[in-house]
Image 1: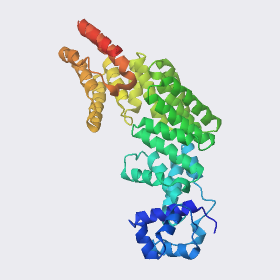
Image 2 (image 1 turned 90 degrees about the vertical axis):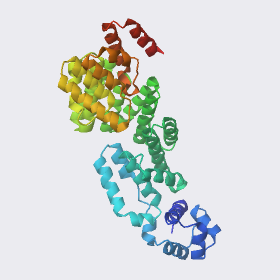
Image 3 (image 1 turned 120 degrees about the horizontal axis):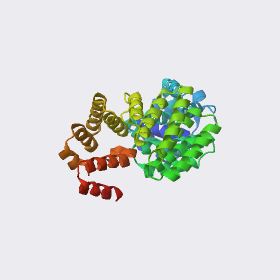
Image 4 (image 1 turned 180 degrees about the vertical axis):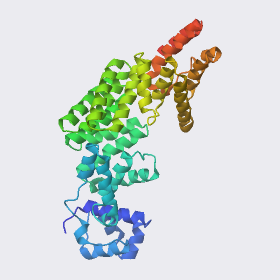
Length: 399
């Protein structure tokens, strides 16, 4: 039977490890030398049929030569669903694999099955779950048991995994490795999309914009229009700090495209960016309207800050309190800094003493609103006659 020795070896080794069996113990139980078993597990030897039957029997695996190796087996439907941003198709494909997991566990496709589980769990946001860490270690040892395109997706999702854990340098390394393993333009676009996000987090906006545009062109050229919309959202993020008007234009286009392609999740993301851009452009009424359109689902701190301050500027006290309550809940849930929350509450109360005391406390959670918050604090201090403190605030912001 013609099957990849490395994939068979990985399957046998992983099943042995799953049962907490040492190589020596398996050798003693089967009467096969430990050295020969090691060669089989490392893909050096191709065991005869009777040897395979003996190993499968000892590992309590169903032996079916017809299912041991199916050359047509592929993860392409899964990767295609992810590129198309069709998570319903992703879940349907994996549900089918899961129903067949016992057969796949006893086949040369076991590494691919575990890779599919890894990809699905990470794409569902389960990055800190114990099973994800377990799969990470297992797949790192899979090596040539995975074909080139499968190894590329393992490295891609390894990069996404590290990015989700805020391990940006590790993420960049894995993404760079993924880029070298295949030429499929859709996959390359997804790699570039995440590379741009890494660069943005490292405060390298110009480099991020170049890679982001490359991803956008590749997605658009290959008909991955929903992915292209997500990529344009990232472009809006890149412009928020220095060119909020450009970010606003991009977010408006994203909103139109999200409505056209019926992407409610992206529509909410566009509303969030529109709220931030309007706030930065001194358009509090528009900022408040956009913030209210997405605040029931999106709880990121910059949005809540923009919503609270926009409501205060519009003299909408109840709306302001709504966003302040959301801020407080998020701070407690994530054990984050409450500096900006306490400053806004002092602003609402017109507590001059607290406004002065809190004015020099920066808040990394404010993200793209940092400069705007400094401006508002400066104006407040000047209005209170605290010019010396206002000058210290500007000096601190410029450091």
